[in-house]
Length: 520
Image (cartoon, rainbow, N blue to C red; front, side):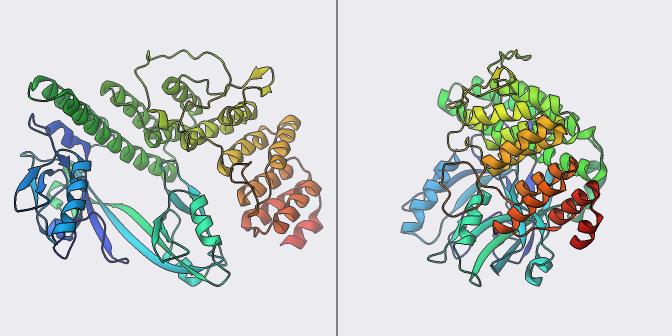
């Protein structure tokens, strides 16, 4: 939401290097929805911003905005309506008024610290990035040879928010690694490119409200919070259906908004407990959270979106429950998780569903990750064929089923990351057949080149080469591993520490100690 009188009301900092604290709405607020609720809920507010100073808080309901002409306020109940009002008003007037309503009872809010980092960098930048399961592009590694500007300002886990266009100096949103790489490689060596990064950290709420410290930290698992969210959905649904003045369209809009809030809160919880498990090695909590999220969305009849589903599957994968990730995929989509045309029996009778866009590269990445945990490369290859619509492909007598038309058409073609997971599945099998399959996958991918067709096989990247080097190293085949290492260097991609240490391992496994010493 914008305030147009020489300022803005926003959930992000205006200064690029400013550290802001954000109050974020929690889904326990859903339990307090009143019968009259029919507005746009403030999901987060930056502490110290104009919105904060004006008294706006997470959980407030935006009920009205200025009319395009004059001083009247017109009611608003949808975000699209608010956006339209802002767009039309700012053409006529430099100022705009908003009316908010505060829910009478308290709600649960989390506090996050958000830092925006604005850097001008030249090639080579010296960072590794990957598409995350929840739709972000995150920094996964920083090269030892990166410039001090990079090493002193960036950390693993930072998100890439936007990148400067090659013409005009505009900042464009970054949605995937391909877009970022394209923007960076379009620059000449030595030419700088401006990139905006974002760092998000959860902080203790008692920095702002010490009186509620014990209450906020008393519950180790999110069952009560999600229960409140489901109760809130029931209350909203009941109120909606019992109010005769509301049209069916308005009831559907209210239910959809409540379901989206439930999914948003579920994602927050899943990210939190997945991150904790990776640090503490506690594999029990993420499974419980994922189970409870599935219960909650079924109770609320909320269709899963791709981001939430991929996080649920990731929670199972990181806790060595990959079979549950596969069965969840099958339950949601009614498709065999091994990519075959086998019939799927749904345990919950179709109560667990997802929208069509949820079947995309992110959820399928989580599915392939589950297969990779077992080295099930046959299933991975069938899934690749299913994504490509190749129903003629068969492995071990099982034919693949085409998934064309079953999911998001813009995000169904397998990318390099998808192929790398399938490659890892084959390499992890540790058998001759697995190694042979890994070689076939590796050789089917072209080397990186500007001449590669846009819709052809995805090109190899550093992870692809390192995975293949490791596959040969594990098999004690130094010469083959060394050939891949040479191909890596000739491809124009710079080997990293993993490349060298893996080749050293191949040398030692093959008894070629002199080669290992030469590499050190």
